[in-house]
Image 1: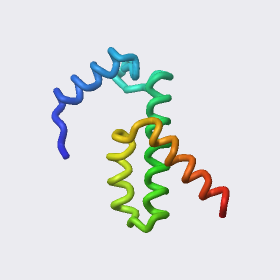
Image 2: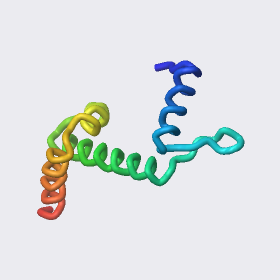
Image 3: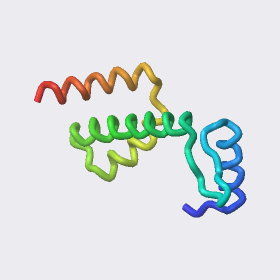
Length: 93
């Protein structure tokens, strides 16, 4: 997917206004602590869903694609329940 330069500029400006990132003097993008926390939480959700799907027999490519969708769509309560299930499965090995 190709993204236009103006689209990137608008998105970066909006994320900066929300306090998730900032651009330094040479226009490099850096996450704020708030942005880093959201990124880490999203990455954890992604990995949990990917792992659960692959353990259920879903091929890696499909599991990664589906995890990308699920990490944003599942409620916090459902995510925590699925994470407990995954954590319990790890403990039972």
